[in-house]
Image (cartoon, rainbow over all chains, first blue to last red; front, top):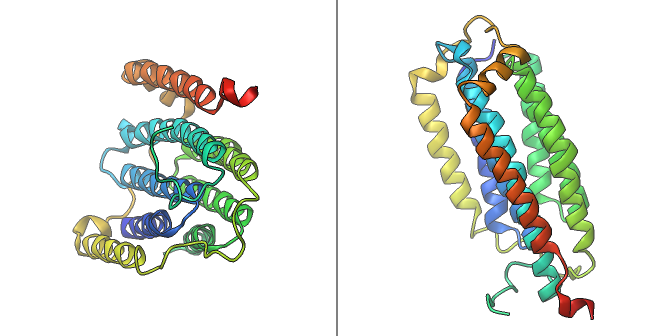
Length: 103
Length: 165
């Protein structure tokens, strides 16, 4: 049986891969993918801590992960809609080239 | 460490690296799908069956498709000769430092050596009962949030009137 630290290390690795991608990639969609990876790492932590807790029958971690998945889905929909609007306006999805906030 | 955990963890982390480092955006999206599937496998291994299937349904089914659509809709403007990422010295040290800090904390903590309790009694029925009793207010707020996000996404992505003319 894998101890808790195995899952926590996988989750930390996933978070840092997502962080590195969100910080270095130029395309806005890739930044969003990095953020999704970080959210998923947090979800893995919730599930792992729930499974290894002393009272797993309360199901708190499961509930938190379920709500977090739903909110991440809403976030992805709004984020991609924003990226598509920015692309239509500036003709690019490169975050370095989108400098103006107004019109 | 069991073999199944090693395989799932390797698949998840390897495909996450691929999703963040490949040049072609469609390949990145495929790597992301693999990462989500690997995470669902890890959830199943942790006896969280319902969350695992939700992960497949929501992430592999919906979010990945959304991302592929967004990639296809915003394609064709990326110059091929331009680097896909800014200089790696900007973000990589931050990520490596963050990982080292978290790994040190995990390895130093006595909680990390804990082994799993006996498999808890969790069925879809008990989850549903919890959602309808203890968590009914968050559930309703979430329904409102999803409706608002759906309307917001449609309104934001709708074409302007000037664009149509």
